[in-house]
Length: 304
Image 1 (tube, one colour):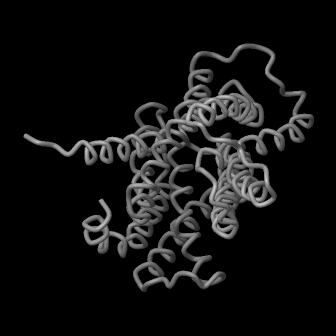
Image 2 (cartoon, rainbow, N blue to C red; image 1 turned 180 degrees about the vertical axis):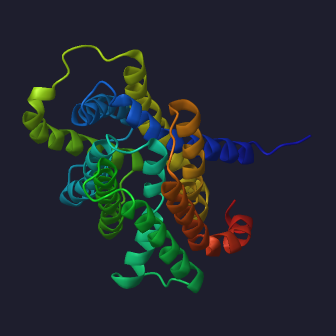
Image 3 (tube, rainbow, N blue to C red; image 1 turned 90 degrees about the vertical axis):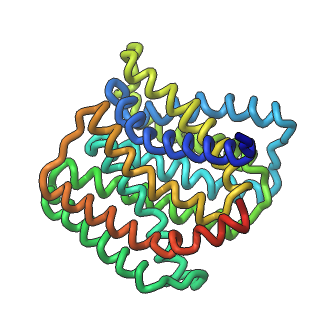
């Protein structure tokens, strides 16, 4: 049977990206078992920067340092440093599957800002219903945790991280620096590492004093090599080959798998109201992406 190798590459890299992004929240949770979240994130950036530099050199690219490029790196750093610092702190209070589900709300927030603030996208009725259902689901989870509870703090931290990511998307779009994706990522990682250098002095008292156990260390290395570099290459390949709507569906698919990984590998359990709220968020996301599902066959027939 003849098989188009390009189609096989697309399918395999799409599946690999979904797998990596669905396991990343669990890697974050496991990496901070014996490391303070701030130090775990600092080590992730510190290890990722030289690896990204080597990859940039290997493909024959340079790191532009003009004014527009620096602004674009700052926009990317808002997603890396800004979003990740809140995510790592929030991971101290939340299971990995809930983190993934909350980050799955980011396309909904992007669409809402694009419609209400920037006027660049018109939301359909199905998408408004999806936003409302997801918001009700979030309120259901939040209202049954208690405002002083650890889970409530974790939700707030993750939502702050999602907000940083969403603002970064629009800032990057505004800059439109035309950088090579790997150069953009490398520059943003460098600035994120510099920013962490200003944060670390406030956390000297929790500096690691011994080698983490193999679970935390493995999760840290996974987050550096797999969740940062391999996922980045898969994502950039797919962005180049597929329609944007097709690629964006990864954020819809990953929470479902993240629930399975958290349950199977980390023994994560939820109370009834949390399950109800998470189900409502999932249904809201499904309704929001309903328009994409309707148009995917036409887009793929033109762009695959």
